[in-house]
Image (cartoon, rainbow, N blue to C red; front, side, top):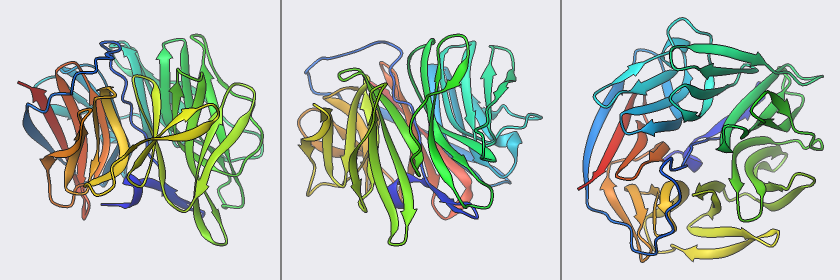
Length: 345
């Protein structure tokens, strides 16, 4: 499995690297049931084969018959895909997109964050460029992740970069229902990878990486609207996920919650196949994670691999009341991706 489920190689000539985003909101609304999450799924797999190199990085859907997936592709025409309940098809022919993040709130409001300083919007009929966003002194803005609680409260996170690799900085943007604007945060040399809103604290929790002379350092920050605070720094990968907008941070096989301005240990999955990164879930007793042997699930009692695959590499997921979609790719073949669909019996 690739380290940390696809961090984006961050060196530009700067060598880039390793980031990812995936949305795990449940459009059906909160479910705080303490009942163990069911594992009684029927699994099907759709294989997507492309001539170009394609790596999916994000997924969002309004229903099990209306699901979007996006990622970086060597040809923009296959960067966005849509599932209509029967089949997956490319939906970006003829548009200049280099996406990394996707999110929406209805079938006619879907947002796309790109690595070419643009944001695009799907209006129910077609994709249109919504705007170009630049930071003074930098050549390009990468929008790597989206998260939002409503159509007038969406956050984007990523970085502003110089093409020669001499400098980069973390950036946050916010959509208030009218326009996208940069959030005024202090300069910090980091590439934000995933940002999730934590409703318990009201903060945006962000994972990211920075390179120094000793190598890649993984960091987690909290933005409370006034202060950007570092809450983790280390060589061990820390991934930010969420379940119903409660942020859960995975470090190795341990899961932490953000409480009182710090990370507090919540679950320890040591001695299991768990390797971190929470992709999506319905409640604290029903969520999906990465397993060293496939797709892992926590049902409130124990962690277990419930879908096995040789050399698993998960890069996204989204969940509904009765369905879950997980993106897996072929680690040694950039032309093949798998859309794994689990349906509760």
